Length: 254
Ligand code: LHQ
Image 1: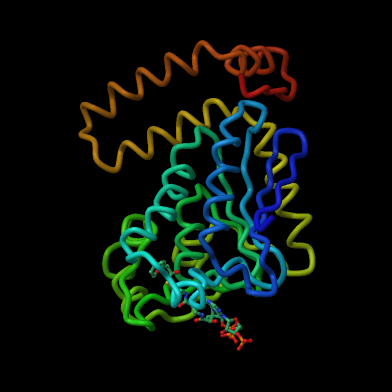
Image 2: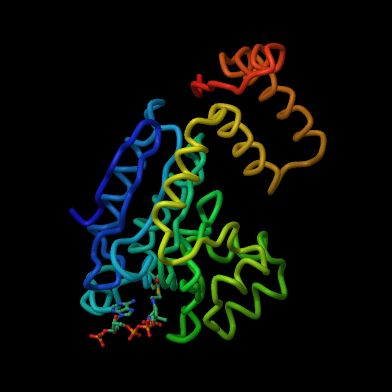
């Protein structure tokens, strides 16, 4: 298996598991990741964490595999695009834990997640321009939305290595944890999130996704629709009750 899966309470951790190849992405890896993300639609999964085994998150497309490819890049990219859409469509928070280098489509995978947690020593790089390619797997969509057009153009044109600290300052990375406690701190963060009001968080994610191309009128209508759904949830009842009783919440994600 090139994707390992571990479920603990509501937290599903998916690990890109080709550490000897710095988790370079193969078709097999994309197919397995797609299956795992489809299964993650199960309501018992309340948060998904995507990370890499060994010293890298992922160095992107396995450039050895792509040299012996049978299909066009356009055809090959359908495997990536499926995974990117699944990450976005999941109605629950999806975290990327960037434990080392995230390059090319490896970086794209992290951008399709809702939050990026980085280890101090990690870095990200677009990489595509260095081999004469254009960004893919959603990078040209997400990056300008996260950091703005000019900064995105700069990163995509020059492909510098952006340290975790620089990425944090640019808004690419949302949390940085020390290398030696990275795994424990990521786990604690993700477990905490998995016990949160994940139904409402999933609906919030949908709202943000739709706001990328909708008008204010459309968003106001959609907010009202989503608020209706959230308002009927057990989590809303629990939130209200906990507030009245002046105690902590025990959300179920239902
Ligand atoms: C690799 C790779 C790699 C194989 C390092 N493949 N071996 C999809 C499909 C269709 C069209 C094209 O687009 C795509 C999406 C893409 O992702 S295209 C972009 C692919 N990725 C890259 O171009 C990144 C290439 N790698 C690098 O720039 C560096 O390796 C980074 C900056 C990621 C890491 O640098 P270092 O930490 O200094 O490591 P290194 O460069 O020494 O690499 C270690 C080994 O890993 C080395 O092998 P070796 O046998 O010499 O130890 C590299 O050849 C190998 N490796 N990336 N993508």
